[in-house]
Image (cartoon, rainbow, N blue to C red):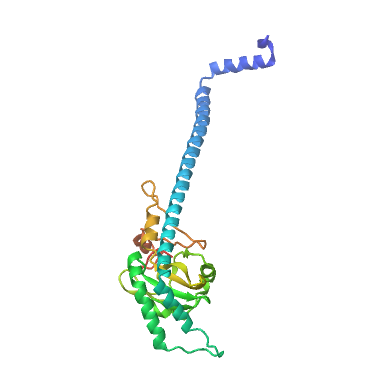
Length: 277
């Protein structure tokens, strides 16, 4: 019978020992409970991690959809300005005034004539800028040289760090740049001129009567307004926040903890300093 086998005898001796050595039972109970607790804890942790991952993915998709929708609106707004017949006419005149002469020598247009065209162009932009909350503009020719701008210091300059981005616009695309440091001093929210101020542009192609791209129009956007506000809407829980970071690991949306960052000296201890960029 089973009781006479070696296994049976071992089981019998083990049962007898457990009856006599009662102190073993708490140890066995502890081992059993610890094992069960470990598996329960692991299961709960996996469930919580999966739930958090799902929340993050959902939030990312929502934020991405909102940003892409906002980009599309900015591109459409800039496009409506670029397709205005008077704007197209003035940009064509400005480009023609700076083209080489037929005799092979550079034509030297009158400074007053160029200033007059730029003044008319600036006047044409005002209504569109006010309607769509743009705070500036640039016009670049096909060589990516600035020929007109709200900030005169940009005229005549090129922007080599954005060459690939602008090349896409010249090819006929429309796009919105990510925030970057301005090349020239700009007015901040308090009206003070500051260098390196965060800026971004909605850029669209400007076409002639034959639908050929002759220039790029960029309408300046302040990223600390709607773009950062979109990021701030991506909240979950009591303290969850969403930030935009570019491929160079630079923060391109603002944090609501600017004062704390100043106190920690992670950004300059200046009321005008912000965490963006």
